[in-house]
Image 1 (cartoon, rainbow, N blue to C red):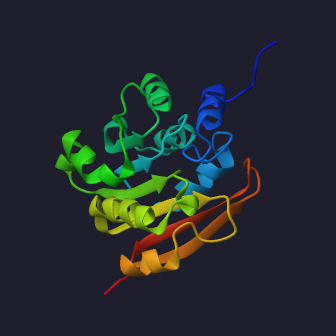
Image 2 (cartoon, one colour):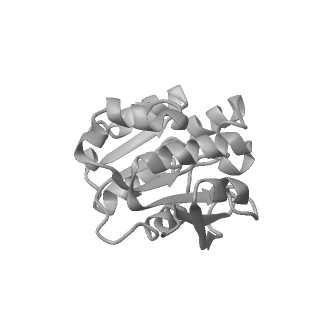
Length: 197
């Protein structure tokens, strides 16, 4: 009998079992969540960075939405998931590393040579992270974004994924996007951008 499991589901679940705090979900993102994330991207978006590529559910959706392989940079901290992404998307730059080091990693990969990203989409478990770590990751992300770029994040909790004091200290505003019931677990999308001066 043919399996209908999404690519990488077992890989993802194994990594969650090994380190549930580092891998924020028990299953890859649903197509509905990926669509909700992509709907928040700016008009005429060309260049995107993905943080926490996982098994590639959102990566696949970004490519299907028209983002070219060379205009997408995927960052993954977990070695097994990184290897999975590299195999699944051989033409996409997939970098192994910590999101706090994103500016350096993006420069080293050559991605920033073509200019800053229009948007960053994130599957990181920001909600459970201490405030200093949230600040470091968001600060690094916004270093790689154009002035009017957006940071699109999903979360499973009832509150915004970035603490208000962290967002304020970085000069960021937040808008709540769609709630996606058809995801395991259900998720809410949030969009962060710089406060216009």
